[in-house]
Length: 575
Image (tube, rainbow, N blue to C red; front, side):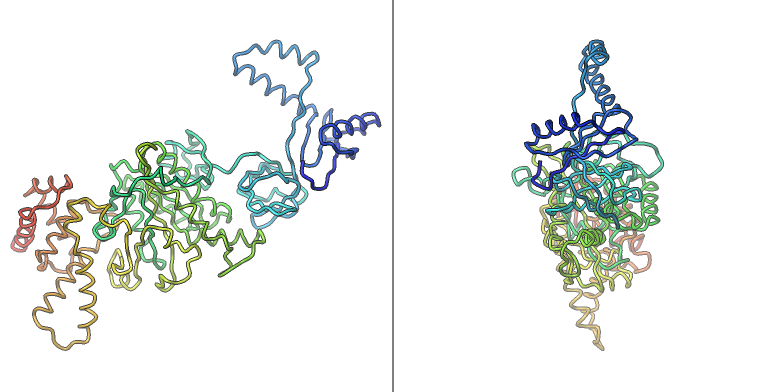
C-alpha cells in the first residue's frame, strides 16, 4: 500500500455492529500494519454481505462477489479435468470464498477525451483502466497526486466521482490472418459490416523495436511499380521511406500504387488512415477492392471524426498487426497516412493532459512519438524468422518547404524521402517526384542487377536537363545540338509520367529506360506518350520473349539485349 492518505470504508445495507467494526479494524491492522477503523457507508444495492475498500484495494464479500468466485472455481476445476461435486458439497457446507482484491480509483475530471483519476497509486504508464459503463482508457500521464488517462470509447458515461479500476494489462489489439481483407477501427474492431473477426492472438500496441542482432541488411527490393521510384529511389524490404509534400500532390496515390503492385508477391499490406475524411477512406477501400488488392490488405481507419486518443493509437495498432505477420516470417508493407495529423492528435492530448508546450505547442517528447513507431520496421535475420516490415510514412508540408518545422524531425528517422513538388504536379508531371530533393539511403542495394545497370545515369541526366532548361529559358537561339539535348531531357521526364493504378513490371521499366537512354524514343509524340510506351513494351515482349526472360531472371542486360531493345524502339516509328 502506498504512503498516500490511508482510509478505509465499508459498504453494506445495514450498519455493522461494534464487534464487527473491531474485527474489520483487526484485519486492517494485520494486513496493512495500520490502525484504522473503517467508515460505514450505507449501500442498498448490495444484496447481502459487504464490500470493504482499504485505500485503493477492494474486498468484495457480497453475494454477487461470492457467487462469482464460486463460478470461477467450478470453471477452473472443470477445465483441469477435476471433479466439481466435492466443490459443490463444500459450497453448500463450509466453503468460504477468498476476499477479492482489486484497486479502484475515483474520476476527478473528464473532458476532451481525457480523464484525471486519483487513488490508483500503483498504476503503470500505458496500463488500461476500466471506467464505469465499460469505457476503457490508457494511462498517459503520472503525477504524484493523479493519473492522466485518455479514453478510447465514448466518454459520455464517465462522470466526475465515478469509479475506475485497474486491469493490470497494457493496451493491445487482436491480430491474425482473419484481419486480411477487412476494415477496422484503431482498436481492431471491424467497421466494414462483414461480421466479427476471429483473432489468432493479442499484441500490445507498444513493443520494443528489434535489436541490432535481430536485423539483417536491407537488400531485397520491394517493388512499387512506379518507374520514378523503382529506378531512382528503390525501396528495400525493411526500409522506412518517407513520402513528403504539400497537400493534394499525390502522396496517397504513390502509397496506393505500391499496395496494388504487391499482388501475387506474397507481401501483406496494411493501410493506416489517420485523421482522413471517412469518405476518402471509403474511396480508397473501393479502389483496393476493384483492383483485387483487399485480398492481401488490412485497412485501419481513425478518421477525423474519431477522438484524438483513437487517432493517436491507430498507427501503433497497425504496427502491432504488421508485427504479427513479420514475426511469422512474412513480408509486410505498412502505410501511415499521415503522421502530420498523428502529431496534431498527440499535441491535443498532451495539452489537455497539462504537459508543457514547446515549439508550435508540441510537447518536448514529440520526437519519441514517431521514432519508437518507425524503429519497429526492420528486416529480421533468418534466426528470427526472416520476416520484414517496410514502412511508408506520409507527412504534409506547407508551401513546398521541405526544410520547415516538422514536429518529429521525421526525415532524420527514416531511410530517405520521396519529395513531391507542387509545381511539377501542376505542370502535369505525375507522379510529381522531385529528383533533386528525393533520396533513398538504401540505394542500389535494394535493386536487382538488371534495373541497377540500366538506371545508373538516369538521375544525373535528369539533373543536367534541369540545369540546361533553366539556362536556356531566356535564350533567343538554340543550336541543333542544344535542341536535341533538351528533347532528350523531355523524353526522360515523359517516361517518368505514369497514370495512377497502372504499375509497371520490372521488365517494362528496364525496356523503357534502355530505349530512352539510347535515344530510341525521341520520335514519340508527347500526346498519349504513356500508351505508346506500353504498346512498344507489349510488342517487344511478343517479338523477343527471350530478352524478357533474361530481364525477369535479374541478370544484367548484355550489349546484345540493349541493342535489340533500341533497334525495336526505333523501328516502331515506321510500324
